[in-house]
Length: 126
Length: 244
Image (cartoon, rainbow over all chains, first blue to last red; front, side, top):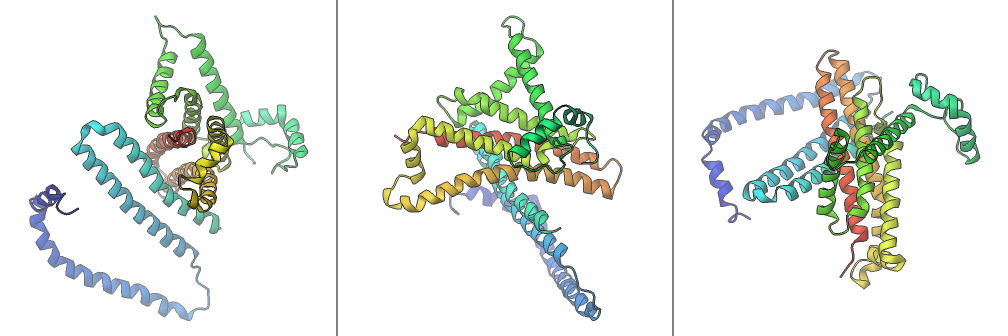
């Protein structure tokens, strides 16, 4: 795969945004530590609040996490599909009709997986 | 259902008792025996009557010299479904074009009805897509049986290699039955979700912003109707394909 797609790699190195990339990497470290501290706080808060006797309803949290995983992974899949479709279209504009057909079908299939999750959440969370 | 459309009330007034007694005879108990016909059924009936009226109008005013606007719209739809069917089913697609065109028009109009304020999207209830999906399932299996014969159609389930057939046959049967479920849930969930998004944003910002999501609903309606039609075509093409 690597040697066939040389065009893609040179484009990304010469991209104007690539110059900015080194600077942003240093900032990444700071962000990482801030986010880790926030995550620790998130876990710490329920531990302190556990003194009360009211049971916590975890259903909405579970539904939200499930939907987030489904939507995020579906977004990744749709992004990959669209990327390859646009690449194929740029290489061979003549094959537009077939590529469009397969793209729409594929996107609908990927999207329906997220919607299955939504339906399951609606069926279970009541 | 406490509130209903005037047309639903009219239908219930005219045919309510007859429908309720037929359902009792079949052993089905309607949720509301006083009014067994609900809004979604009334809307579907309106769509069906409208489509039939449109088809009759086009058929009666067909003209080569002076095509009227209705005929031109019908020609655009015919071109669209015909080119897609030609691409997917290939040779001999004309027999199935009427069915897939009806599916497409019915689904797209039912989806778009949700854009009219005060109306529910009929396809946003699971029973409506289920009916269309069951019809598609029966139709493609019927044509597969007619085209290949009972033995040939059963062979097409078993796959090309004879010793793996006992494994493949149940898998194929299950996957064919799952097609009904996936067609139903895809359409239902898309319509339901796009209605829900509008509703949620309306509860957040009750001014202007939710209108953006009506545009989203419009696009989703068109794409889901297109996908439904494409899948019906793909199932048909697999059912009637001859192995050489």
